Length: 235
Ligand SMILES: [Zn+2]
Image: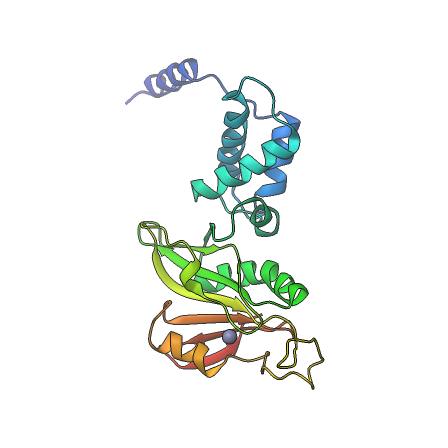
């Protein structure tokens, strides 16, 4: 086959689809804010096109804040662009699945880095669910929803039909006395730096997947895997 015919084909293609510049500084700023530094150039380009599409679909230009908020939702919904969790999570409803992540642990670590300080600050538990996409073998973790001083109910978390539940995570709030007043590590009456027996039992019974994660007031993130019965610090 001749080289000429291949070159001719490429020329014909570029005539049909003119090159896109993707150089609008507003859109680039939104992409830089919402997309993980780990994203590939192709994923960033896809994010840029989603952002640009939001504004061109509207008659009037959006404010920067509205554009960023809508872009966060669009990028979350797309589920192919690794997101900057700490930037996207506050802009989407609690319980929104974010990803993709290469593993359940990676998603849990990223989300608990965001959610644990919120749990400690409010002195309320929070948490969410972790899913696997059976088509892509990628993982998604939901943004935190609220709990109480000593509990979190994963039953409130929306479960997308097309994702498989594999794990849950929760944050143990701050060190507290039984009446809910804050204290220090020595005065803690909730064993906050460790899984409760009920936490492990949930995983053993596979109620919210067979793996459970907890973030603690010490800053440790722990994982309990019912398959191995191992309880380990993962950060
Ligand atoms: Zn717990």
